[in-house]
Length: 370
Length: 208
Image (cartoon, rainbow over all chains, first blue to last red; front, top):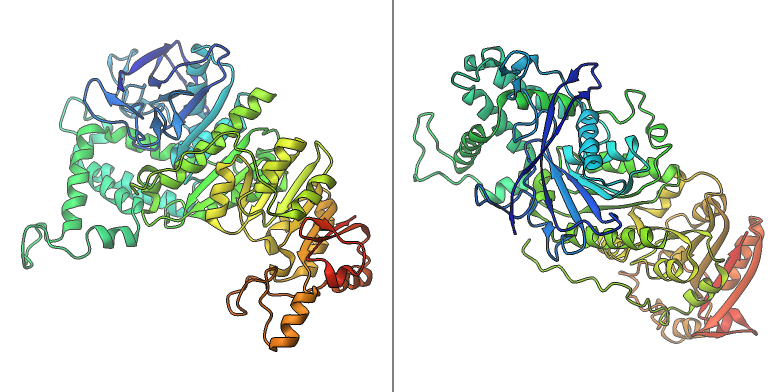
C-alpha cells in the first residue's frame, strides 16, 4: 500500500485561546475507500510526535506508517472495510500549520508568535477536514496517548458525529507527573542557546536541547522491565568502562541515537506548543466533574490501558470507565498485560488488535441495524 | 508480540447448550431490556441476549483473557471486580442484573445481592446446588471435600469460596427479605419438581 500525503486548506480557524489563525493547512492521508452511504469512516489521531503517515508505505520516504501494524487490509482497522483518515495535528511540523509555517502577515516563520493551541483546537481542525470530505458521521475516532485525548475530546465536542471512541493509553486530564516531564523537555529546549527565543529558522536549530527532550521522552515511553530486557547494563562496543563521559552503556547509545534522529524530523517550537496543549488538556475544563463532561455523550467506548504504562497509568483510564459506568454509558474496558510501557499501544498489538477488531465490527453492525 | 491474531468469525452462532441455566435466563429476560451480567466470562450469554433479545448488554469480568474475548465478540464488558464494581452504578440502572454460577465465588455474597437489587429492578442468580445428593454422597463416603461433576475442583484450587444449597439460599432470602419472584431447578437441562435440594444440580432464582 503506497500512500501519498494530501493537504486541505481553510480560510481560518478560531482558537480556544481567543486568537484566529488564517489561513490554516492540514496534511492528511487516507486508506481504504469511503462507502456509498459514507458510514465507514474512521479518524485516527496521532500521538505527540506522530504525523499523518499512519499506515502504508510513504511514496516519498519509503517508510511504513507509525501504526502500520494496526491499519491495513485485514488488520484491526481493516482498510478492506473501513475508510481511514489520519491528519497531522494543528501546531505540528509535518505539513499542518504550526510554528514553523510562514506567517503571511510577516513573510517569516511564526515561531513564538504562533498562538498557543489546545487539544480542542486540534479536534476542531480535524472536524473541518472531515466536513470538507463530506463525512457527516464517523464510525470511530481512535488514538493512543495524545491521540486518545483527541478521541475523548471528539466524543465530548461532537457527540452526534462519533459512533464509537477508542481512547488508548491516555487520560482525561494531564497529571502533575505528565506536566512535569513535559516541562523538563521544554526547559531543555529553551536552555539551548541555539533556541534564540524560538527565532532559529534561518539559523542552527536547538538540536542539543531538542535531543535531550526526546531522550527524557523515550525513558517515559518504556518501562523498567522493557529497558532491562532491551539493554540491561550491556556496554556499547567495549568490554570495560571508558572512565570518561563518552558512551559506555547501550542504553546511553540508544537514547542519543533516538535524540539525534528526532532532531532531523521534528521542530523544537512544535515540541513546546504541542506539549503545552497536552498539559492544558482537561476534559472537564478544570471542574473535575467528568460525569458532567460526558453528560451529552452518546457514543460507545472501548478504553484500553497497559499494565506497565507508568506515563499514562491504568488508573487514569479506569477513572474514565468508572464515570461512564456511573452514567450508564456503553463502555468496554481492558487493561492489557504488556511489559512495553507506554509504547505498548504502538508495538505490543496482538491483543489490542483482537479487541479493536471485534469492537469495531459490532459497532458497524449496530450502526447498520439502527 | 509477533503472535498471530486469531480471526474473528462474524455472526458466529452462540452456543448455549452447555449451560442449561443460560436457557432459563434467556427465557426470563424480556426483549429490549437493560442487562448487566456480573462475572460474564467471555460474554456468551450477553452475546446471545444481544442477538436474540436485542437487550442493552453490559458485563463485568475480572479475567483479562475473558474480557478480551468478550469485547472481541462485540459485547461491552469491562475488566473489574464485581465485589467492588457495582457501587458505581446508579439505582435501578438495569432491568436485570445477572449473576450466573458466580455467587459462590464472590467474597461478600450478601453485599453483592444487596447491590444487585439496588442497581437492578430484578436480579437473576444461578448457582450450583451443594445440597445435591452426589455431593452429599461424596462427602459421606469419602469423608473429603467433595469433588463431583458439579464441583470439579480440588479444595485448594477451587474458585468456589462459599458452598450453598438451594435451602441455604431460600433461608438467606427469607432472612433478608429478598423477594423471590420465581425459582427454577435443573438437573442437566431437565426441570426438577420434587426434592429440588436433593436432585437439582443448578438453581436459578429471579428476585425482585
